[in-house]
Image (cartoon, rainbow, N blue to C red; front, side, top):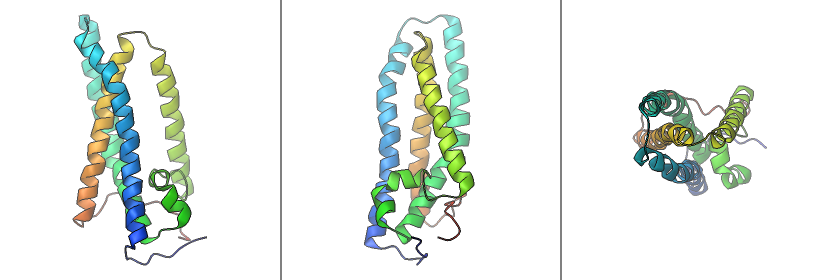
Length: 179
């Protein structure tokens, strides 16, 4: 069932948008909360100089690649763009699954679906691999991941504020054309 864009925000649509963005923030926040103790234990533990060099380089890399390029420039504005679209085009399924909708796991263009699911599979494999790393390497990897996820969470909040202020988002919502 497709809906038409009415360019007005219904109360149900506003609830859906808040649930969508809030759910994505909860998912990222949960990962940050789970990984921070591991990362913190590594930071305060004894490290060799090569661990410190790796940790600094990895954290800078993750801040740039995951935080800036992945989240700030692509994922976060798209989450907000899809939430905005959802606020004007709510349907029962989209409202119930709003966080997954905002992350483009369904009701998206074919390209966006492929990219969203492929990145998710890569992240799952990365998580499995990171859990197999011995100390302190796992903690060092987690430091970079926490920085990237925190940047992403902040970017979502920033794009929400920008969107509420009427600033155009740099990403389309990537919904199918018949919508």
